[in-house]
Length: 466
Ligand code: CS2
Image (cartoon, rainbow, N blue to C red; front, side, top):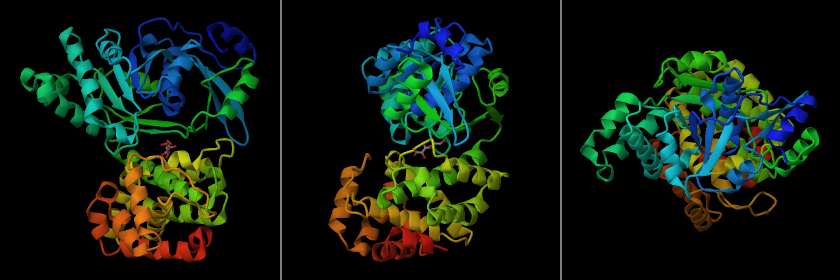
């Protein structure tokens, strides 16, 4: 089993390993111990620790599921990350996570950690659907405890794929601090507003969920088993707003490749719309066409043309990120990375929560600018068809979505009646908002593509979108 004792042997095999002390008090409390954090922010913290700055060790908090915390604990919280493309592969063991716990089992551990003198940051990757009063409540309890012991504020950095993620997190925390349960008038909300920073940020790296294949490859490369191994691509970006409880963090983060900027919005918009927007479209296409991973999807000429056209004609021209054509070209290559094996059903998970971030703002902006929306409408048609839970070959799949019951019931009720499908699923306010379905240029195009998908099949109609 991978452990502190195995590190010397791993270094001899050419694996990059942590050589810094890992037994202090963590400076970062991270909520959401999934693959993404461990192959993205945790590796940035690993670099900072390796540079001799011991303030970035992480307490990794799993929100509910204890399995990963247990697996990590059994291997001294070490785990390996394979960086891979068709051309090259390398392995590195991250030492950034020093401890872990499960919020649902021991919320007090999280609260106490937030009130510890060494803690400076809280980072979050809890997914779109988790920005709830319950999350805010946990954070506010931690901040209350911190204030009570007379410590200064924290940087609370959302790293989820939400537009204005820091702004949204700050708003729910201030609302929770103002709620009667927290003693509304004790000044906690003012203290949070004055002392804590909630920077907006854009995080980007494709990190598929851990799989048995990755564990098997890790065992071979490392010579010891690793139950928490991950694989990712070489590319990564973390663009964060210059808004920290401790201003000097800007220089520390910049030194290890994080981009600290005055305005994140242009980067966040480009990433949510180009990367995540294309991802969600390919997720529905792949699920329906029986193409299991993203590299299979983009290898289809019709899908490549659709995604290229989507980014070039419908999404890109409305972006403020100046180098978006380069970002688009890099994305097309990243999607094609055959080693990632990024599951379409993983990306289709929680689509009802993702569409409002990924497609709706683009469609509204394109309609307003009189740009085409054919490819976006095609993607929307694919999602409506996807909600039926059965692919073009008749194979059933389960919808993993907080609205799964509603979506399935509406899709069943509509059956083959495409007008009803569009009028119900295509108009759900929680997914599409109120404005887009009411725009005369939208639903007729969604209905058009739904009809063609039904009549001609998905790939043929994908090839026909212009
Ligand atoms: C993906 C993202 O699962 C999904 O919805 O679109 O996780 C994507 O891989 C990351 O945002 C890339 O930075």
